[in-house]
Length: 484
Ligand SMILES: Nc1ncnc2c1ncn2[C@@H]1O[C@H](COP(=O)(O)OP(=O)(O)OP(=O)(O)O)[C@@H](O)[C@H]1O
Ligand SMILES: O=P(O)(O)OC[C@H]1O[C@H](OP(=O)(O)OP(=O)(O)O)[C@H](O)[C@@H]1O
Ligand SMILES: O=C(O)c1cccnc1
Image (tube, rainbow, N blue to C red; front, side, top):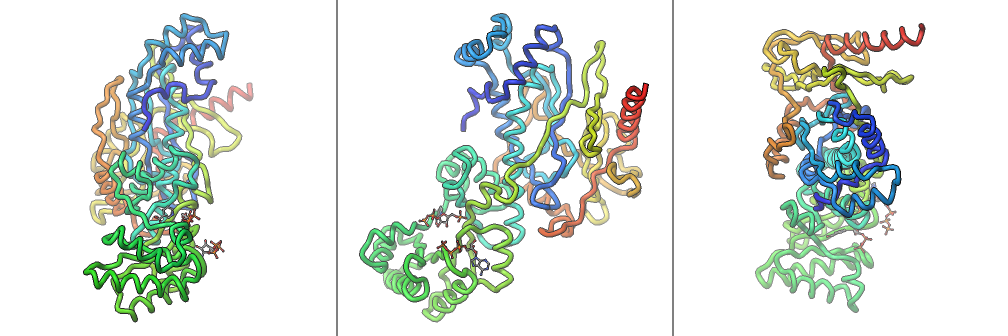
């Protein structure tokens, strides 16, 4: 997928600010930004971090082409030619730390930390959030589907309903990270080495004079992968009897039919009837695929009704994250250089939840050595060494500071990994297989109460005492200035 030629994949205000900084002589001031979200999507208890691979490729290929520069000159007559010369030589020289793809992540903790000159940290904001927000959203939605489908097979069918090609391709990858088994999108399969699967459409049946003829021709063409869509005319009276006849013919040729697919009607009732008919016909090995606007709620319901569905095809609801189509991840300045020294900075808001936490921070996942389960995440400054060692840690929730807890005998796992150091890539991108495995390990760290679909327990994100005190001090300073 496109990695180069994305320098202009940014909001114009970023270039305007960089230009104004350059005129002002401040474009090389050092900064630290953090990307995070404030609210979990879908009422879920966790999110699944994704988007890093695309962010890495974007940063590596970040150059302004001659065409880009000509376009900028045309777009904004204020931009001086010397400024465009500066952009011509631009490449990213900053430092990035990030959670790994597949990590479970939570509100108000940094997922990506970007350190560099204001020129480069500001430039990358838009694309970084674009990649992180979409892919994390879809991976989280897919994870919810996976929680209810458990060990059933999950197929990603969303491309035709996705918000254009990139969403389909990266969405298919995000779904696979969170536990889907295959995608119908061959390009996603080719690019990312995701297994691909496919049945056939209603048009295949409609184009022939009879359903039986359609099934037999298809079975002849794909004898080892026969999956027949049985709802074009009448599922119970026509589709399934014809599929059974086809399966018998396949048996005579020494082959086994793979599955039938139900795509309309009452999927619980029809799957139960279909299972009975297939079993009675001596075809217990033929699996039942279901599709039709499925999501985690319909799948959960269908399972509760005793539906006999082995394989779920999930498209529109997953790829568009239909019940919450955006993750509100933000990118906030937490430190700036002043007089040659880095100092924390805060953004005050009338809404207390939107007040930023000043200073550059790390995230430690505090895991009990006794249970092997995560207790909370601890957000602290990089110099706070004591938290990383096996001492005693006082946890409290910054939003509800009266919720306090002391922990000991724990392991503190650093969640932010160095990705770029002064412009140099220092991270080896894992394979998708490794990302899936890491995601599974991450799930295993959490008690099931945090993972349930409905009203999950809230996993606590604790701020270090020092970070909390700095925040309070800066809020008070601001309030003091207002009162003067
Ligand atoms: N037993 C069931 N319990 C709950 N939801 C179901 C059940 N069976 C099907 N559904 C879901 O109900 C919705 C039915 O939608 P709709 O009425 O559009 O489908 P349909 O009857 O198959 O019609 P169409 O042929 O237009 O697709 C789908 O989202 C489907 O997944
Ligand atoms: O319902 P979704 O979760 O989005 O899954 C994908 C849908 O796409 C296909 O329908 P479509 O009507 O586009 O084509 P068809 O003629 O092959 O059924 C398929 O039959 C599914 O119903
Ligand atoms: O293979 C299928 O059955 C399929 C693929 C995409 C969309 N709907 C169904």
